[in-house]
Image: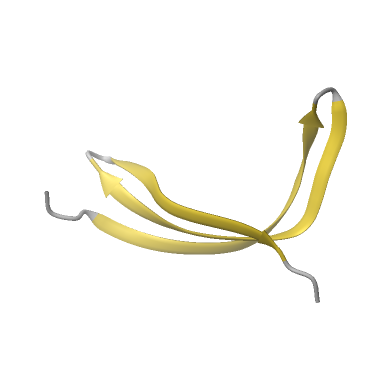
Length: 54
């Protein structure tokens, strides 16, 4: 199988939600990843998230 079109991305995100019916959140999360276009749609091939403390 030959590789499709590949793109990389990076972002800093704030994430909020609920876990076990309790509020949850994280700020300044570093997110990086690799996307590949397969059969006309983009698929995440790899991703990583981590907290950055400066």
